[in-house]
Image 1: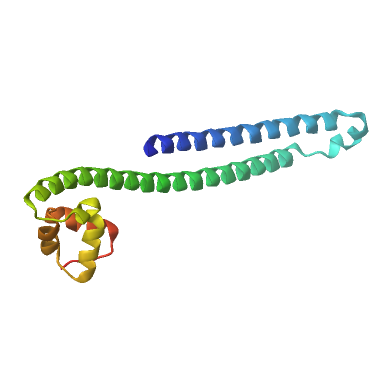
Image 2: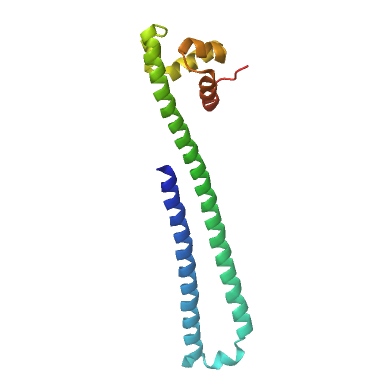
Length: 168
C-alpha cells in the first residue's frame, strides 16, 4: 500500500516538473510575442535601428537555461525526498509485515506452550514487551528464547530492529 502511494507521489512530482516546464516555455513565448509587438509598434519604430537581436537572443537563452536549471534542481530534490520516503515506507512495511508474521507464529507457540504450562498468560498478550524487559535485565538471547519460547533468531532480530539491546 505504501509502495503504490509512493509511486503515485513520484508520478505526481514528474507531472509537476513537466507542468512547470510548460508554464515557463509558454511564458517565454508570450513575452517574445509581446516584445515583437512592442518593436513593431509605431512609437518604438525609431529604436528599431539600435536593437541588437544577438544580445536579446543570448539574454533569452540565459534566462531559459537558468529557469530550467532551477526546475531541474527542484525536481531532483523532490525525487531524492521521494526516494527517502519510499525507502522509509518500505522498511516500515517490511517491519510491520515481519511483526505480523512473528505475532502469528508467536500466538501458535504461546497456545502450544500454554497447553503444556511452560509460559504465563501475560507473556502471551505481548511477548515483545517481555523480550525487551528481559533484555534490559541483562539476559542473553538464548535465555530469553528459552524463557519465552521464541526461537533465538527471532529474539535477536527483534532486538536488532528495536536497537535497544546489544547482545554478546
